[in-house]
Amino acid sequence: MEARSRTVTNQAPPLVGYDVFSCDRALSEAVARHLPEELLDGVREELRGLGRASSSDQVREWGELANAFPPRLRTHDRYGRRIDEVDFHPSWHRLLGKAVAAGLTDAWGRPGGHVRRAAGFLVATQAEAGHGCPVSMTHAAVPALRAEPELAAVWEPLAASRVYERELRPAAEKAGVLLGTGLTEKQAGSDLGAVTTSARPLAEDGGYLLTGHKWFCSAPMSDAFLVLARAPGGPTCFLVPRVLDDGSRNAFALQRLKDKLGNRSNASAEVEFDGTTWARRVGEEGRGLRTVRDVVAAARLDRVLGSAALMRQAVAQAVHHASYRSAFGGLLVDKPLMRNVLADLAVESEAATVLGMRLAAAYDSGAERDLALLRIAVPAAKYWVTKRCVPVVAEALECLGGNGYVEESGLPRLLRESPLNSVGEGAGNLQALDVLRVLRTEPAALDAYLREVGEARGADPRLDRAIRGLLTELADLEGAEARARRLAERVALVLQGALLVRWAPPEVADAFCAGRLGGDAGSAFGTLPHTLDLRAVVERARPVE
Image (cartoon, rainbow, N blue to C red; front, side, top):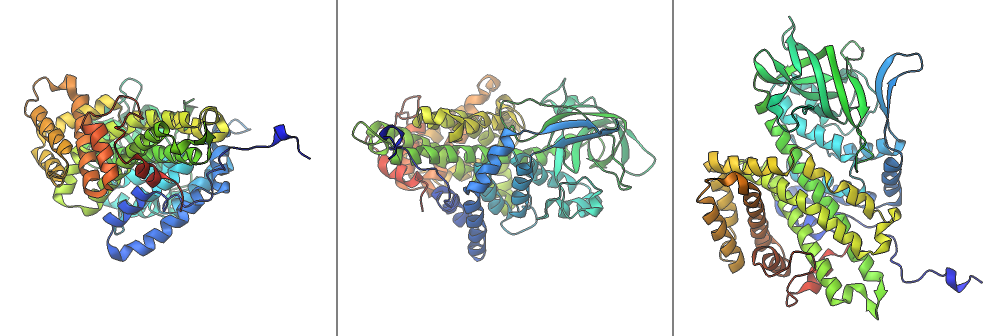
């Protein structure tokens, strides 16, 4: 007979084997809202399959192994030849293969492509976030490729392929490719215009040789990279393939891999171009910043979606734990104070999901008003949602107590991952300044934003007051740089409130407006007014069928 001290009781079962998509009501409702009726059945079936796989024991194990055994750089082979390769654990390749097969690099050329891809990205990232980097960069590179139709004709179908091939070969010999970026430099960071990498034109049309060093090269084992370099006409965008058409390796020297706080499964590298690195110009010479603008915007939206995914998984784990764990005479989920914490977290998670999916739908729409909305809403959402990710994950971890602090719970990995999306594609100040720039220079974007939030006017007095307050702040932008963060925050919060008032259940919208717009909550999570229907909010966030 087993000793009583060894009997395990009062522990939540592992949160595995459920449909991550269907059990996320905010996400599944957004997909139904934003996709044409004729696409829904097929898309739902795809996302349910991905949702079940993402919570399976097998895929979860892949995520654990890919992070426990991070990538290793091999600069030379056994004979001393330079090879500049990165070795990944087999689980990394399995995760990437599943993501590519699910269409997570295919958005630009199919009906409803951005919404269905965004939903899939949000689901897959909950299993493991690191492999989302090459998926995201490949997706985001397409707008730049289209600046050169000849390049796009070759590379875009390969980028959108459902086939993942890990081997480095000429693109013409592959059924699918991944694309990375090399934009930032040691002396410049987010100031892309301060690029010092040089590009010398060759006699052939569009060919250049690059000399320089990139401080951050994302997904360094990709098949090609979008790189900024200074050509005779100014900063220009280039496509740098790893393998040239004749099968030889391009000069692409990986100097080291970054030792990062989180995102351990994914490689980020420093790379050097030695003056013989061949590149093909993308877009006009001197117009590189404009060429990569849409790339950066698409990648920023993925940062929003990635943060929404981390928040959703953290909240799902916290609600699941509290639904099984008893303390002080009852289940934690039924304790008023814990219920307040869980509801507050759930509202934050749903607001992030609803906003991210609305912006994905704006890409699909292609309407002038929606495209204008993206110019202000993407940097505002990137600023605010990614900033909220760290405290949400940290509070969710605390809901599990000591159980959440141990690696086996999965919460520490989520917490290490949570600051990344705020840093990538421009940290907070850059996003806030971009919002300010749009407010000052693009009246069509502000008009589109005001029309969007205006759809909800009159539905909640707290939202109406927040809209009036924002308009008052926007009326005088003198000396606004010092308060650009406040402006970006208010732009994002008012937009989230408007979307929730229109589309979320009343109890969710009520809690958001009370806690985020009405000033009727404290600074920490779990300080919502007790008169709200918090039980319904928590129940909606429960990860069950």
